[in-house]
Length: 63
Image (cartoon, rainbow, N blue to C red; front, side, top):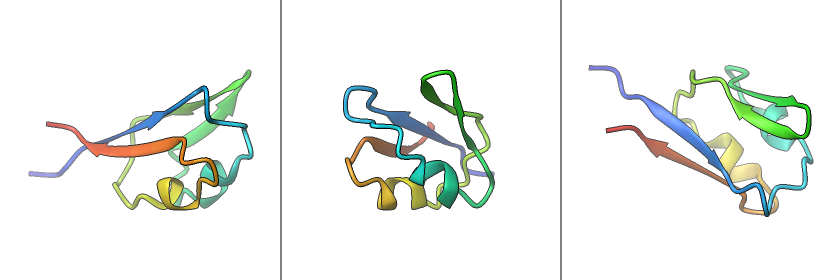
């Protein structure tokens, strides 16, 4: 069974630097309006989490 992941963004910490959007290899994240949106196709690579300078992103496996 294929694992599913979700991206949680702490909106209070996020300063919209866009590093998460740029580093995502499957282009799962997008910036719309004034927030970053998880499009639901996260592979769990955690590059967004790793490169976020504000620790505003957490990737979790869905149960």
